[in-house]
Amino acid sequence: MASPLFLCILLVVFGSYLSTISAAGDGHFRHKMSAPPPQSYDTRMFLSVTPRPDRAGAAAPLVHRHGPCAKSPSTDKPSSFAEALHRSRVRADYIMSRALRGRDTTTTIEMQEQEGKVSIPAHLDTSVDSQEYVVTLGLGTPAVEQVLLMDTGSDLSWVQCAPCNSTDCYPQKDPLFDPRKSSTYAPIPCGSDLCKSLQSDHFDNGCSMNGNGTQSQCGYRVEYGGGLKTRGVYSNEALTMAPGVVIKDFHFGCAYKQIGSDDKSDGLLGLGGAPESLPVQTSAVYGGSFSYCLPPVSSGTGFLALGAPSNTSGFSFTPMTPFMDYATFYLVKLTGISVGGKQLRIPPKVFEGGLIVDCGNIISHLPSTPYAELQSAFRAAMAAYPLIPSDEYDTCYNFTGYSNITVPKVALTFTGGVTVDLDVPNGVLLDGCLAFTESGLDDYVGFLGNVQMRTLEMLYDVRGGRLGFRAGAC
Image (cartoon, rainbow, N blue to C red):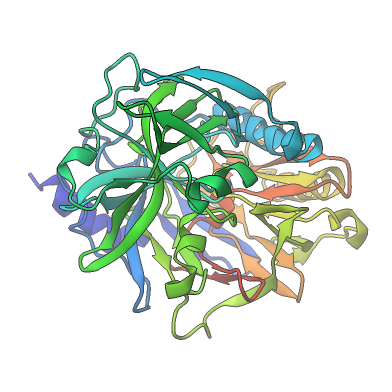
């Protein structure tokens, strides 16, 4: 019997052949249904598989947390479409309510620490319940592997730290990171500029008390929309992206108190546009650019890479800006949609709100008119297959008894005439359902979710103000 590691390598190399999809010449793809891979894997292996970005920068393997190459597959089951839709809507609604509410309305909370009492402002961040992709990095010296949720909608990174008992931290599969065993760990002083900047960015600048009654360590607190709250010490540490590629003095949260259950990871890696994020912290070395490729659930590894490739000729670029005055979120403008090779008739003005590019949002959200046109055209192309009646979702199919499925190609066109063909079926269907939903009225901001990003390399050239797409990257 083949080992799990061998099976994972086969998935990485031959993943595109696990399901047979052939061009039909009519704007559609023929998809031959095949059984999913087994869901039992060796939790000891991870960095055995080499990531594939063509660059001389820092790169790490990236996997779906339910995928065959996950180091520690999550104990919960993969989300059904109904669950994914609910989580995606909660996250989108939370981001939008936060934007409309404004950052200045954060509340003040009282925290009672063992060393003393400290009053700090709470920062509400985006929901983590919808996060599906994880990256394994090394933290500390010697480096200890940490499996972190990857989020372009968050900035401050954190891990659970020892000592932390089961009542203060949620159970995780890997040992807690122990800063006492690292020669490069250092808490950030509360009077430092780094700590003060947390106040301006609405994370914290709370200070804990040490044994002699003086304030010494910078505290942080983040409250997420899904109910998870994390707090601890803002710290410096060495972060290993790949063998021999070490980021010194990486600022992160060493968490000693968590509220809300979560067994999906050891922590979170923030890839947003604010100063606390990994890309901004490393901008002096990597120019603030980063990219990733999200593999389908049943395939092997993708990658997360810092820095831009030396050759970007394989990318198509569209302008990218921050969302309103929020440095965290990345916004692009959609200008058109095609189904089966035919451009849909959609007035350009309905796209004015733009799309937030959010790898933590599972499903893409479109304004009402574009969504209605996409849904109608997709249903017409899929008329041979029975729709599943439901009050919760409206474009899901019963493929029972069908060995070959004809799925129409769906393409998104962005500002500058950049047309991106979504991977079929992984970038179009989720659990047999069209992986799009309605965001609200026309001109309302939408979201580009992680299903539509699958197999694409997404290159965030922040300084250049552009987002790049490269097909077939993982």
